Length: 168
Image (cartoon, rainbow, N blue to C red):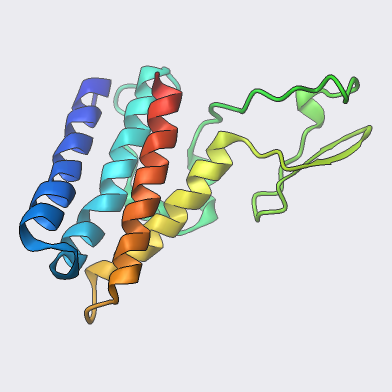
């Protein structure tokens, strides 16, 4: 699919969540609508980004179910590393960097460890994994408390904002 098609698919799913799910049915009655659409919508937006930046070929298709584990990183290209001021780390080389995906958020170089640095790919993938698991939980089984539904919506909004900033 092309960039425009992914954006259109994202907007359709977002509209389903916001208008049908929240405006018409209300959050407490929309657990499955949100669960079935939030993760898939964000994966469409990530696909749009990857296509717009030409990081994947036109036929490349992401699957939301890939985001059930960190192994999804093996299937994704590298993308959008934060702009970091390394004035205080003159020996930095991107070949020397090593990011601990499990949340240590450290950048290790020959000259030491600098905490608090994590590229956008790992931030987004970590949030997408959390969203996918949450959405699967909402889609199946008994009704969940409204706080879990709100958590999914907040995570959706947060990832959406990050992706649009990267696209622009």
